[in-house]
Image (cartoon, rainbow, N blue to C red; front, side, top):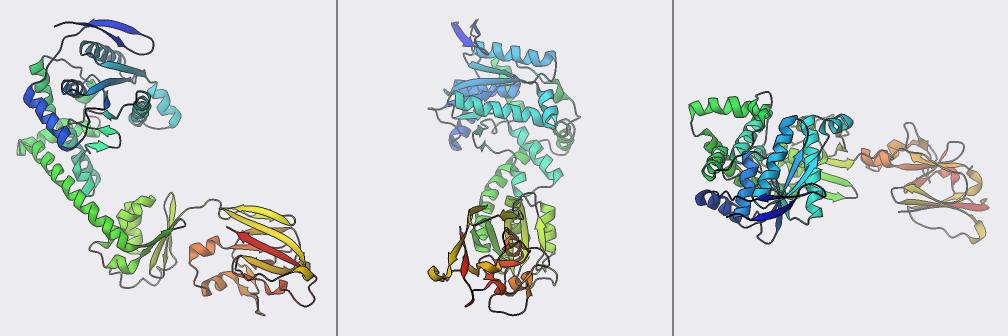
Length: 478
């Protein structure tokens, strides 16, 4: 059977071709169909993009989904990394799609320049370019998902790579069937089964010569390590694949248990600060691993988690003498050990900035804080009893004022007291943790004197007396 079709290739180009249908065998198709249905990967009402390289895997994926009745369009990326071989792959994809009545979307990338510009590896550049294009194309044609052609051997290789690098339970599950809008319908078949199916169908494909070289970690595993393992156990790939499938179920149980444990250990999570109870942590089955599972969300590495855990008594019955007050930092967060708790908060690069107040008025300091400075005649003054309001003798205060965080050596005379006190000692007496101390604001006048420890106490030297003529009222609103 032959029919003439029109296919858009690239931008503004159309070609005609005679279509010759290659059919995959029914048993092979049924395995893929069952896998898709059992795991609810695709919907017959949706439109799907097939990432088509021209290799055996992606060709099989495109044919299988087409024959199973799914609405598919193909996307091919030419990265221009292998000279004429890259152009050969592109030409093959054009011909393949024309023969099989599949619309093809084609894009060219200057991958080397992109990698150089962004200072990343060629492999990372190609990955970023490819998936960025897929996301854009998915939106442009209103597709449901992007289908990629990873298979069982890819899962086996991934498990071995993760084992060599060091991994937890999730690293032993291999490649996920679905990750966001990326779907992998061929994870139920091996590469050898794919090649056999194409041979039976009489369908050719292209081979990437770099897949035959063992100078990349994955290729070394594929070409050297797995063949050696097969000498010990001919069905090693199948065994590892089955183990990965079991570990996927184990991971589901594990994740559920970890989530329940997180809820028991995290005692508060608000205003950007997460608080963990060490008392609750010590009662969990695996405190250190639970701590790792929590801290990785805040970009703490496994080695940092080990260091944090070692700073605590291993039984967690008590803190080590020097543990309280210790601070650990990741790229995005900082963690404080504080009186039986761990406090985690984002790193705030603006927390230490000083803000000058030249005269009376209303000023926005940042983080949603607004300070209002107003002079009021004593005859019309009414005392406001609020921690967010300071009422001072205006004549004892010299402008310009400055709002800043507490500095080492800062002293003031707390309202109602006669002697001065280090601000940090005052805050310690009020059982404030180190993070709160770092955030604590003060208002100082032109002479450098602290006139208000914000939301805590005004300085006693600026108190209102029977000789006060006018009041400087400072109000903080958040």
